[in-house]
Length: 265
Image 1 (cartoon, rainbow, N blue to C red):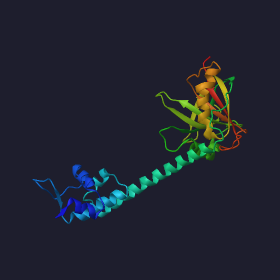
Image 2 (image 1 turned 90 degrees about the vertical axis):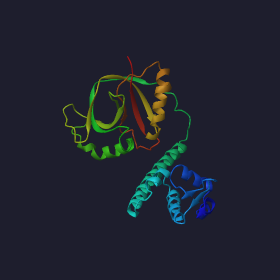
Image 3 (image 1 turned 135 degrees about the vertical axis):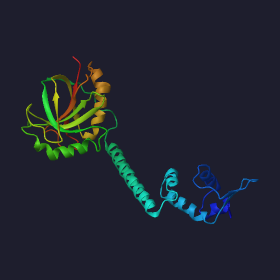
Image 4 (image 1 turned 45 degrees about the vertical axis):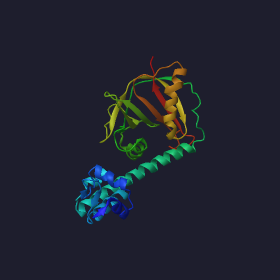
């Protein structure tokens, strides 16, 4: 039989690791001395431990490895395929995070956007039709716009001139976002799209100049300082972005987006 030290050396492990594996029931000695508590292992356990070490090096958790004890070759291969798919997803998520960091670093100014005094406007009720996205859905708002641009021609009699990025609060406290066009009240709604009736409302209108990636910072400034500085208070309701010919491209430094925030009378 092998001592714990001999077995540990076979795979370059510490004896502490083997004791931990024993304590969690993952890999136990064939015999434990009654008088001295020493652990002893059978030669066949060298290969068994080797499989655990291999799976650990491939990134599987100890819980996953425990579930795979005694699994046949095909089950093991399927588990590794699924693990590889998870890793690929994590890699893509990290790539996207790095890209967001890089975009942030590329911004010339880190300070908050210069103070704006809003223009107060009153708009009559209108209707929009478009594609909707909620935070629990797959993808994100830029991907929603890509899908919408491929289908906006399906909206009959859409009013020319501009597009709407509409944020609609929901009764359950959530919200959804629509990439949409203004549409007549009786126009049909294409399959997979939604119609929203925007009520007549008093708005504070702001301007965002630059890439759409900077919109969150502008909204934070609006609600955190610009509205209070103007003596205004946001009202619960639909707020929206409006983009016309002055919107040049999502990443263009000179693109103009108008932001409409409902305010209390």
